[in-house]
Length: 280
Image (cartoon, rainbow, N blue to C red; front, side, top):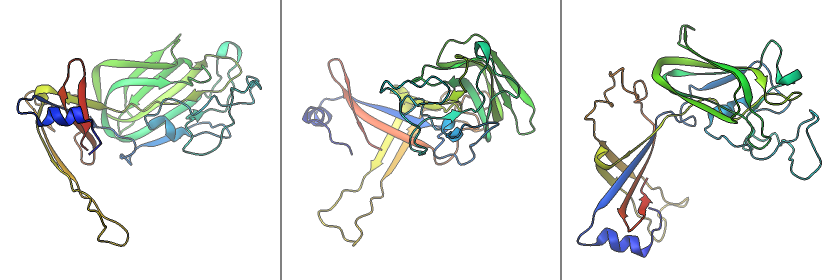
């Protein structure tokens, strides 16, 4: 249990009180889903294509490159080559006149277990202010059958995204092909491509939260320390049948799997704020 203010303690223990709850579930957590694999057809000397599926859309710094854009003004940082330093996928080919790439175009491919796709995204480099201008996103099933193609031209957003009118189900491969970049003479730089699905439930959607939390004793009973085995049980409303595993029209179809990351909050309503505490 995270530390909370005395005001929260007083409100949560009051004889007359109204308690609120919030549940957040990551249905496609790239850190838990071992089926996610990333492949590219070209790479810079330092590049981390797998970081395009880790839900981190910001590079660790304005990274220097030997493409003629590097200025010794103190704003650039060298690529460290460390996986913990976010820089995403850097291509090898330099864009030509007007930012156009030549064939074979820089291409990023992400494969995973079958899942529905409700949103598409292609995130460029916010530190260097570069982004894909013309590109195509293709979705395939396990038989390599093309399910959906999204062709974008003239994009001006560093973090481009689009919510699909209808979910595309049974997707096992996502492909991003870039034909034009925002700056001539520079390579493709994609920070995020794989779209994770996160849902938040509040109000009447939350029926029950049961938390069993072990308390730490003053002295450990084991030489290596104590082990805390906490449990949380959550019950959500299924009035619309969105949690039915066989409901193909549900936005959660093919996503109801074990080992999903869950966060839960409880809190009381103040004058203008919602005071909450993370319980798991």
